[in-house]
Length: 343
Ligand SMILES: NC(=O)c1ccc[n+]([C@@H]2O[C@H](COP(=O)([O-])OP(=O)(O)OC[C@H]3O[C@@H](n4cnc5c(N)ncnc54)[C@H](OP(=O)(O)O)[C@@H]3O)[C@@H](O)[C@H]2O)c1
Image 1: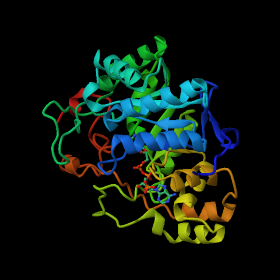
Image 2 (image 1 turned 30 degrees about the vertical axis):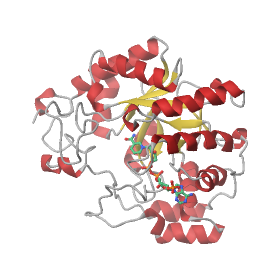
Image 3 (image 1 turned 120 degrees about the vertical axis):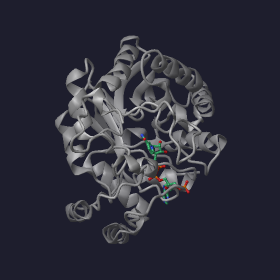
């Protein structure tokens, strides 16, 4: 049994709406390494450990099992619904008119909720990387990003909020050029951007852009996703847990390097959502952000150690000329805001 952390002691972040979100959450994407049962068991343990923020998504194929845990736990009275902050995301094959609402309705049913606290557009690319497709295939219906297409999806996200089915709406895996193209068109601004953020990939410009626009950065893969099977090390062999600056701070504090990554994330001002199915890990991950902060020197050393090393590169699309999924259609000569970027 992990040591329970009082949720009131966990740092919180204020959203642009004035509402609060826990400053650290638990991821629920287990790749192919873990079953939905293992992950929902971990969610149950994490609630007992003191987690209140859970990052879910329809494509993780485990919302029904996790929803049962939420329902059971709330029924016991050990946690109130309003104390939990639950996110979900619309997947790439459900963009556009109509499908966004259906996808949200399915997630609400699976998660056994009346309202999702924060609902994201998972990726800004309709039909790229459809569920179940192999890593080197893309759907025949895949279409490039355009502001016009994205906004057709975002209008449905705004409708979900109008209907009260979601409390907040957010974006994920966006770049500055794409945000520049769509933010002026949004009737309801995103409260958060979920993005890859860890010591070797700090995205300082995008991070600052978010702060400047009152968009909360939520960092996925916060300890560098050490077990991700499709980890692509062709461009770089940086492993966050082996970075000298991380090891040095870990030694100073007598903790595992993973915990340094999480302290760094919370102290920097992003919300990390680490994944683990092991009580000893997820308990320690939560506890570490409530005690013994990194020094300014340690924070500065880690900031200076950024390697601009993205983990999730989407090798399959490199033929488009981009370095990653996120960079697609941001290249020179391609007008992000125009549907003429069809390729
Ligand atoms: N929006 C998006 O497009 C997107 C993309 C990717 C991920 N995400 C979200 O972000 C979450 C986290 O990302 P991630 O799973 O890729 O990466 P991560 O949280 O950086 O890494 C997870 C791995 O770290 C290990 N770990 C966790 N705590 C540890 C500790 N204290 N000591 C040692 N090892 C530890 C876990 O192993 P054990 O299980 O053995 O502890 C697991 O293998 C996902 O679950 C998902 O919710 C969102």
